Amino acid sequence: MTTHCGFVAIVGEPNAGKSTLINQLVGGKVSIVTPKVQTTRFNIRGVCVQGGAQIIFVDTPGIFDAAKNFEKAMVQAAWSGIGDADAVLLLLDAKHGLKDSTRQLIEKLQSAKKRGIYLALNKIDTIQKPKLFDLAKACDAFGLFDRIFMISALKGDGVGDVKKYLAERMPEGAFLYPEDQMSDISLRLLAAEVTREKIFLKLEQELPYAAFVETENWEEEGTSLRISQVIVVQREGQKKIVIGDKGAMIKNIGIAARKELESMLGKRVYLALFVKVRPGWRDDIESYRTLGLEYKG
Image (cartoon, helix red, strand yellow):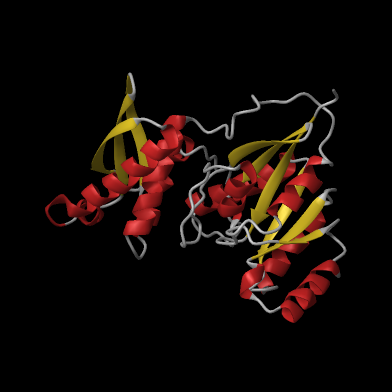
């Protein structure tokens, strides 16, 4: 049997629904999802098999007008994912339509002169059909997209059509991953991402963006697992917020993360969380590498 295998970069502006879509495409959680923008910080690969094709979906950080070096590193990671891909799927929030920033992103894709660029209009359940069709027509006028899909990543509507269509366009080649593997992300890093997701969901304002999580210890003991993680923040005041009154906040974060990890891993999980202050970690090159990022100024 002839097999096909290729990479599809999923790109778009922050909070377009890229992580939700990639989780739907692969049939499991490989990328964290929160209502906040710029949650994904590095390229995450989700793997699925459709017929005789293996598709490696690359969930990229949202592309936006970055000002700080850490943000620029995230955007550079997104564009590197585009350059290495066999196909590009631009995800657009249909409710927000064609904003100026969206037009700029499309123009950059045009200048890249890359073949195999597709568009998925997401969150179609939030917009009236006449407006949706007008949006599709306006997007088609760019002359960039080989095909336009209409989907709801959250509900799964239309996602199967996207997967089937892309599978038929992957280049011939051997599978790069075992058929039952859903991601190339290590379990240690995935566990850290799960905890970071809970920080996003439990804490408001800017604090989640000032934190990252490292898995320092991972010990398997039969049917149980002991995980030790460090939540790194930039200031003492942020540390107090993460810990909360009498340790209530960090306890709630830990409980939520532990429950999800047990569900994902099928094991009893003992999760220990600690908080460390590392001033200026967002400007530290080594911190970038911990998160799988590189910044070339």
